[in-house]
Length: 281
Image (tube, rainbow, N blue to C red):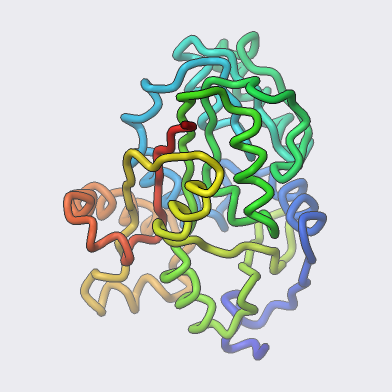
């Protein structure tokens, strides 16, 4: 991979393999994940995702399992709504940040942290009435194992909020930067540039996968429709400026304007992120 094609131009990088590499990267990113100067794009996408799926959270019944809870942005929200939440993450350091956040929001008594693997959940069958798994499934090498595990630990009629990066737009990003098909770049102040495992999934791919394990997709939303912006804005967005606060604000504004496209499901292929509301049958 040449430096001119790598998103972090002129900077050496490391390739971290598999789930171990993902965990290692997030352990390092946890220190500044919520405010890193390098993750403005990530935060912009997370904010857009949150607006796209926020109406679903009121439908969740506890206890709720948050798979890949990260620093607790959704675990804390659901706990503040009154539900018991089990916050699971492979990174113990991300979990520590989630508990710190819960404590600041007076929600810590509602949250139980668990270090665990989303492909091998350490819970009994039919333990939960609700589940959240946002921008996490893409890090799992064997998604079919996760779908089976989600079905196992959820009770009948339980709802699952699931979001993933769209494989169409993510694969285009990887082709443009000549990245490996199964790797994405990350860096923060405490994490030198790395490539870690992450693959996207289209809305139809997710629907087909989870239907095999007894789920029904009852709603779908997309967000971050950057690919249908005027080319001048896209070219500007693709520059190194894409880590600046200015572009974080641009993400937020454009996400609000473009959210109306969710009315037209044919546009979903242009979304950077897909959100699905699934019911366990």
